Image (cartoon, rainbow, N blue to C red):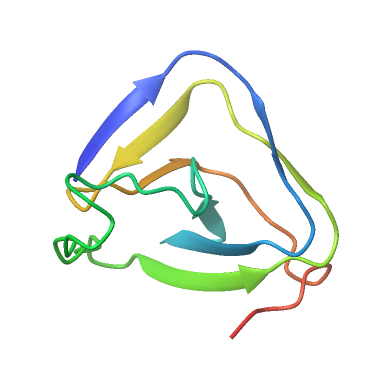
Length: 103
């Protein structure tokens, strides 16, 4: 994976009903996806993606959001690009008491 600093602040909207994968980096911090349901890997959609390896202590969590979710990314933010083509950014704190966990 590659981690890059991003020196701009921005806000991201995830529409209600979306299934999101969030990466937990520890201590309540998460990285939401930069793009949802996009084919970011190389090759055609049927090309298998390389296995994503998370750093030690990180976790992956799936969440289905019931209401629109607006996330303000910090300045500077970090962008994490995995070799499977997925991209996450943040870190942010999210209140999971307001959003039920997906399966």
